[in-house]
Structures are given as structure tokens and as C-alpha cells.
Image (cartoon, rainbow, N blue to C red; front, side, top):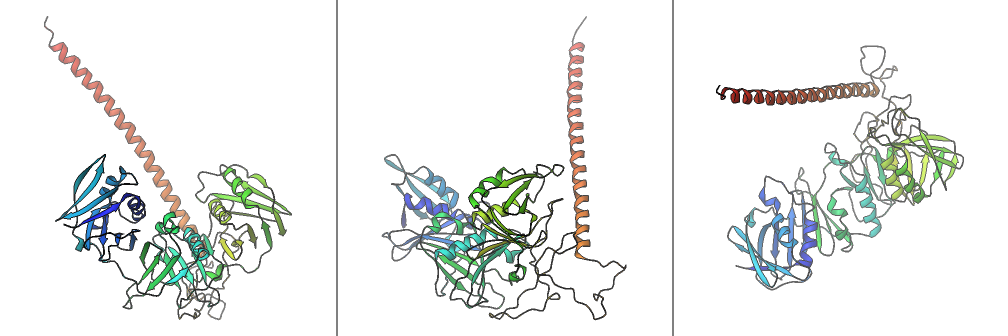
Length: 496
């Protein structure tokens, strides 16, 4: 039996990184295991996977011994390591279907036998052979900021990552959106021929991974037409591999406003400290905050409930230019933009997307309505009928977007697109009435359905409370009946 010696000082941070992709609960036992390998050159590596992501870490120094591979359950290895100090080490060996861990206990060594899985069951780790593309610190920072702005909606898979757009050969950019706000970085240049989407994963934001040297990007496309390829990001000792996201990213440039009427430059530190203290309605899911911009004067607006009046708190150290305007937006998105250092705000009007920017980077934010805090979304769904597709430099079509609208007289998305007509002024669709059916109508119907569901849920909650009261009453009655029965039994036992 071949043994592998693992220094605790390297093992603990390795387990912390692998724990970000290891599934704690899974129907496949192999996915809850760590694969430990020693190569013929003596290098020790630890690997974990959830089938979509593969993460591997290499230890600093090679060791002596025969090449071997062992699978060890992640949780058992973490529990065993937890009580060991940095200067110690543990040894792992394979014993048939089991793994034996030797660990220090005081001046002695104890061992624990753990049921394991055969090494052959571990999914094969992809080997990416593409040429490495260095990603410097500026690009890495842009990607991390983009990941923070990407969608987490499982139904919008193509938006769950940072899009490296290389359609403009002289101006590559990192882009991300969740439909409510859109991030784009300043320009850079990479030796890529096609745009790619790097999927979001919390491992990529892990501090130890980002402190392990420059990122190297490798891309391997699928060998077959319908086969997804892989993206690899590696550092000095870590290697992150993820399946590519298949699909066309929306044409994000069409939602970026071109001209602005109002500008405000913030002292971002002062605003960041002030925003959390602005009153906020806990029932408002959009966390609406207002901003009233005048001549060299900006006030933040907040209220603790929809029935209250807006409270104005003036912001110090702000320079403004242009027409006065009052806009509303999501508080968390505003904080995010300011923490990224985007201290310049540009506004068209209260219904059009606004822009936070700094040094070529920007976040486009959809406005909210003051009455109920609802908002439109940055268009992300393809709609070729609204705009003919334009061939990009990489051979793919740009994807047109559907314009979502609020119940207002104007659209709140950019740019504005006219509805196709059939030449006689009609829109080419037969209507049952004189009033055309619009997206507004659909949105109103959705709100009606939501209200019905809310009423139904409230009714169910009330019914649940009533049943609980009935249940408590029944228990009290049962106790009283039991008490009477006990008393009767005692009386029957009395003899006169």
C-alpha cells in the first residue's frame, strides 16, 4: 500500500478552496470526495468536482513514493484536519475500498478507517491544451466586478457569467447584467478570436486564489457541433475548469444611453457612509431610494413605509450640472456602483436608464417608480422582429432585445425601437378591440395574478392560524376530559 504524506499547513487552505465546489449533499457519493494524486515526479495534487466545475491544487514541494491515487470523503478529511496544528502532517493510504488516515495525537499517531469510493468512479478531469492568455490585474478586477453584477436567475443561464466581448477588435470589454443593471469595463485587448462567457463561481472570488499569481486563461471548444467546451483559469498552483456557457449574449450596447442632460459628481466615501442611514421601507423588495438633484445640491430620499412622506437628507461635496431631476433606484445597486469607485452619475430623465461611471468603466441602472418601487428590466431577450440582426466580426449575430415598459406614458429602456408596421399604419396583428394589446397590458395582468396569489397566501395563513387555535382548544379539552375521568375513577374506588 502506497502512502501520501500531506502537510497540514498546505492541506487546510487547499480544503478551504475545494470546499467551495464540493457538494455537501449529493446522490453521487463520488462528488463528495477529494481525489488525492501523487504523480511519477512526486507532485501531490488535490482535486474536487461537481461535474460542471473541476478545481485542482498542487502542493509546493514534491514527495517521494510511487504514483498513486486515493479518494477520501471531504467532510471526514476536514474533521480530521481540524484538530491538527500547522507544523504537523497526516498520512493517507488506500486499503481496498477504504481509506486510512494517520494523524497526530499528542506525541503519538492515531488512525481512522473511512469507507471510500473507487478511484475509477471519479469523473475524468479535462485537459485543456489551448494557448494560455494572460489576464493582468486590471482585467481580473474587471471580471470580478462583472461577476458581482451577473444574474443569479437559473432561468437566464446565458447571463450567469462575465461576457468578454471581442466583437470590436480594438476595444475588448468585460460585460455582465442581471436585467436590472448592466456592467461594462474599460477596454483592453486579448488574443481571442471569439467572444466568450466566463461562468460565475464563488471560487473565482476567493482571496487565496486571487493571491496566487497572475490568471492564465485557456479555452477549449467542443469537438462536436452540439458539444460544450471548457474554460480554464489557472494560477501558480490552482487550476479552475468550467464548462462553457452555450448561447448568444444579448446586444448590451443598445441599452447604453448616448446623451445626458444632468450630471452629478459625488464624494463617494461620504455617500457610501450616508446611504445605509437613509430610511428604507422593509416591505419594498426593490429597496427604493430617491435622489433629488438640483443646482450644486443633491439630497437622498427615503421613507420607512409607503404611507410616509419622503425624507430628504442632503449630501455634501457634490458637483452638479444640467437640468434638475428626481430619480429613484435600488439602494444596493447604487452602493455597489459607488464601492466600485463609479462616482459620476449621468441622467437623461427619470424614466431612462442612468449611468454610473469612472475611468472608462460604467454601470447602467434601470430607474424605479416612486409609488411602488417597481422597475423595468434591461432588455435581455432576443427579438429579431424588432430589429434586423447585424453580423458581428466574429461571425455571430447580434441579438436584439425586447423592450420592457412600466405603466407610464414613456418607455424606460434604451434605445427606443418602433413597432414594425404592414404599410397601412397597423401593426400587422388583428386586435379584438380598438385598444392595442401592449406589454403594459401583460404586465398589469401579471400584477393582478400576483395580487390574487398574495390574497390566497394570506387566506391560507389565516386558515392555518385558525386550525392551530382549534388544535390547541382540542388539546385543552382532552386534558380536561382526562382529568374528569381520573376523578371519576378515584370516586368509583371509594367504598362507603
